Length: 243
Image (cartoon, rainbow, N blue to C red; front, side, top):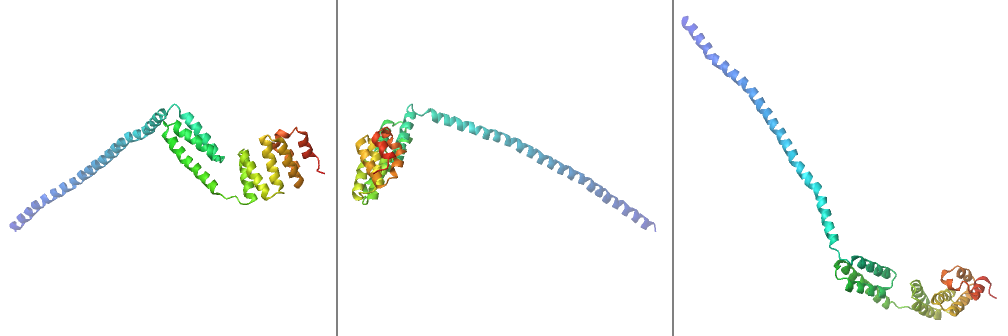
């Protein structure tokens, strides 16, 4: 019986170390929590460090426009002293081109190219437009005028550009093909008045009113007959009915 008691006591003493091991195992859990807290701390520190690192990049991006503006200032300073004159000559040539005065526009572009070698950008653009004017002249030369309306339309276009000699030539050619056209007589009258040919203008206007009496009211308000407004013969044509 005593031997059995001793064996129980030995079993109890052997089980005690296992209890100690359990307590050690439980104490290890707070150590893990502490380590996880340290990891969170490291993450927060990493986030703050990355935020601080991005701030200088923003400062650099804000400084970029200042650098670009300084570059544009340098480009403007390198322009020649005659830049304004080159721009003015270029604008004159453009207006001539839009008015379909291609010969004058070509001369203007030629003068611009030869007179302003210090402005290569304007020169290149002028060369392109000069070639465009040359093509327009070639196309106009290839146009075949057959009918009275063809010559009349070209004559009116020349009249609007105040190319009076060419306008009268085309209008007279149109009149040969359509000798009783009141609108052709009227256009010839305006071209002659603008040219300063009083007698010819009155003669053409009289024929125009003869074929269409309503033209007298149009002529009375037409600015192209401004030089004849005080002329007695002109007043009779535009105010009296023709007998």
